[in-house]
Length: 176
Image (tube, rainbow, N blue to C red; front, side, top):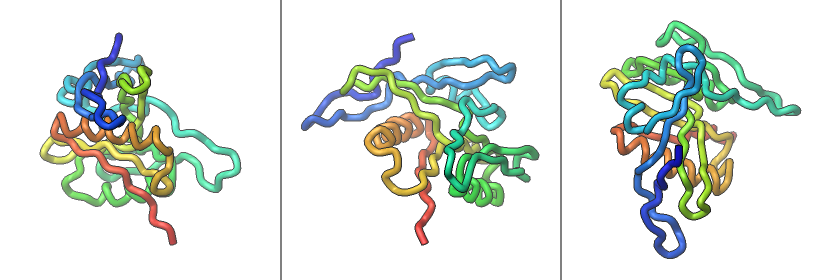
């Protein structure tokens, strides 16, 4: 299914971001991948109950790899891919306003108007709050990690979240 552009126009050589046409891809409880408009999925899909839509990469030579955090909030393990992400899970697990946590439960897909290509991004964390709102977050190893592609994806994810009353965040581990 073609995905409409989240970019409305180009001003001064830079695409102007507005939310439209972002799709959500997620693994249904039976494991089958489903795709629907993010506006619809955000209101009906319980992302906090879903398995990851993609695995965290294992990078040879790194001292840290993916793992599982036992969450008191959810009563089950939540996958994480880094020390920074595990730390965020630990903090969120202690927050009384958090009712659900999941690692990588949704992939957002859109068409990048500036290149005409379909792009996608899998935020690392999903958080559900007591008021029903959600948060999609990434936990990059350092500011600027992922380069231009990550910055563009963050703009699209942030706009998609804002359109449904959610938040987006990028939480970096602070250097020593």
